[in-house]
Image (cartoon, rainbow, N blue to C red; front, side):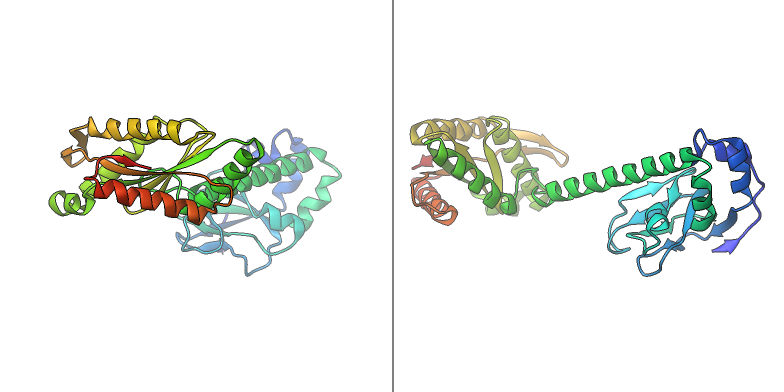
Amino acid sequence: MKPTIWQENLQQLSHVRLFNKVASSILTQLLKEFHACTLDSGEVLLTPFNRNQHLYLLLEGELKVYLGSLDNQPISTLKRGDCAGEISFIDNDHPSAYVVATEASTVLRLHRESLLKLFSQSPQIMQNLLELLCNRVRQGNQIILDSEQNANIDTLTGCFNRRWLEHVFERENTRCAFNEQPMCMLMIDVDHFKPYNDQHGHLAGDYALCLVAHTLRNQLRPKDSMVRYGGEEFLIVLPELAADEARSIGERLRQSLELIPNFYSPVGILPGVTVSIGLAQMRPKDSLQSLIARADCALYQAKQQGRNCLSG
């Protein structure tokens, strides 16, 4: 970071969110305290390893914020007028993230003591800073929520993954047991998937799995959960349904794929696929593993019966 000359611009400063509605007399005092600096592209402005006592205001360029490691994806992008370092600026501690210039940038740097002296003269600055901090907290909460959700989602098909299965099983099993309601599981396997991949390519196989997931998921109730169990296998948890009702649903799902002879994909028209389904109803002493084992056994019987059918 290199010092540079900045043409003081009171109007430019007044449009910055941190100084919104702040009296011009206060801004005039602040102008004397600011120091302009330039950053090269790729230069690290803030790091968790170094204590920070400055607030940075971005005048030109772009900054990206990284959590944990610079190898991770950036969690946010700072543009002209945004601030950086306000959290560590307030608590006089190490920053919680990396802030890196992604292009040649210019920032104004203000030492914490300079701004703290002005808080008593301008409560508006304090309010603006609190609003910025609240915004950071909300962004952080959303990042946590998005990360948790993404950790439970299979990126190819958009279905829940095995990590989510344990959670949803525990939740629905407890709820159904409390309400004395049945619960069933469907275990689904795409028929002849390896030959399909061998003949049409793995990319075509991926599109076929997406077709299965999309076709089946759109026919389920909001309370049902469809999980990609692995490879070409899917599990569907059907709460509050006994075996007869679950069997009807399974047959409808199977037939819906049977009725798609081919489908459009980014690699052209591809042949459709069929599925075999195993059904198991929850028993009083069942665990997730025992329920899956019985559904898998029923699925094996469906395959032995010629595939493209339901057993259980």
